[in-house]
Length: 463
Image (tube, rainbow, N blue to C red):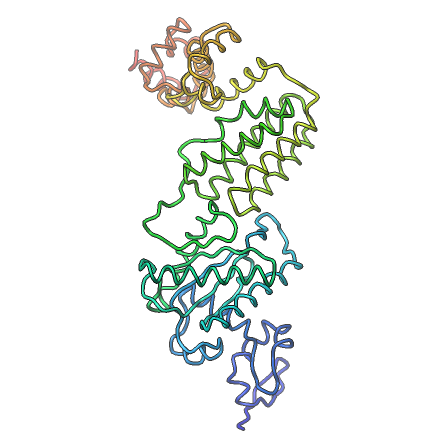
């Protein structure tokens, strides 16, 4: 065998066998020494198969695999031809989104799943490369299957059958539930970046389907999107009542109803998580303002939000929401508020949050309370002593008075920020409520100095 000389790190010349030098394991030794000691066979010079699979996986996804080295690469990952379809696999019950440090005890579980997938595909006589992704709760599988397009019904069924057998085998061997996202077929390696994106999209469908799902990418299927409105606000008042009454069963039923609206809206997983997290924060704010212990509330909210981001399925949300409400009911049920007090507190919160929207009116806030407009109108008038429209107009004008004193704001900006659809309408309402035009009010308060004259000129246009 031919030998060659090379300088080592200390500058000394060392002799290295040429056959060993040509093996990929040698070039990777410095970056993966522990695995080299475990995996390298000194007799056969076989390198780290797991590392080869991972390198193949990353290089394929990023589209930088050197095609000139394909014969050697395929030999190292022990397949005879290029894969043509991708499975992206998630372990359903392991998702450490929030955990800042890796749980080392988890890695053996993921390795066992990888080995189980490899063994099943080998039993089915399917050539493949299977690799776990560092820092992610996913596993990539590149398969050599018959077929040209996933849109063909026969091919689609055969692919689904392969995925189903893999899911069943993994569960029987490891006890782990996995879900599989399937890409369309790839005619070349350059199409695998697209395949990876398709698999990720497919796995978002599993968010609604549940554990052990098989989700095949379908470009015709509606994509999960952003909520056009906060669907959780419709249930806020009901939850406050149930928490105050420590009514766990009603909390659970309402949580199921709320999640049903999320499902109907086809929300993206991150959107659903953010909406529920915001809902939890609003409930906590309510109890903080009512005089409850801030630290305990914060910890309860944090635990629930972590659970939300660490679960993979929408069906888990009702349990998390119910547990959050139950915990609040037990910890903070001592300070009971009357229905009128709860109504007033929530109404004030809604007005503060939404009064800058010119479309915000009594019908909108009634839906936030989950009341009919007529019932809300009667209830509001009884508790506040004035009709809602009159109260809202006064609230907006009081805000406008404060904003008029801000030198950096134009009259149009003041009107927009206080919920008036036009500047002329704002001036009309302002004069009706205060007896003065915005110009007269700003002049009389004498609050503006530098740049004040041009502001008064602007007001004069609308008067």
